[in-house]
Length: 237
Image (tube, rainbow, N blue to C red; front, side):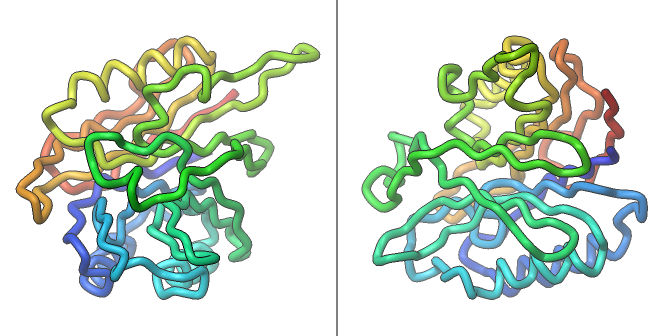
């Protein structure tokens, strides 16, 4: 399966501007791409400003669905969603037919306002796509190995691939690059770790350091720090 990781330079709280720029990038997406993964809150930046949240009928999800159908690929990434008078950090996995499944972020970043604004998810999510079992996780979840554990039952693992969609700041970059290696090795799975780049409205810097790793923790593709780019790797069993 050919995977594209989009290390995006998200403009905070500017949904229209971000989607327009992503349109330009995706015009040159490799045509044999099967899965495209974005960073956390890739249309708004990591924001707790609920004025920029969207409903399940919002333009960001509609854009993802339209792109998935047009490109005939699956697309993953998280959005700030308002639902039932609460806010969630929702990790979507949209299939090429526009249908989708989702996971709500469980572990909220305690050094931000996230725990005061976001309602944590309760359930894990594993989706099936082209014969692959793919577990959805979001950013800070990567620090919790018990939550990410790939259980082995009846001679079969729960998942083949773990996706971590993140907005991980540069001050903690060493932790980010160490943790995704650990999660790959201990869970005997591929890991797709996608982080943003740029500087947000609070002057917080993001290096990126996005990658795809095999079950040995070896990088299959690397990205340049501080550079907005799409990188590719093809994985097999």
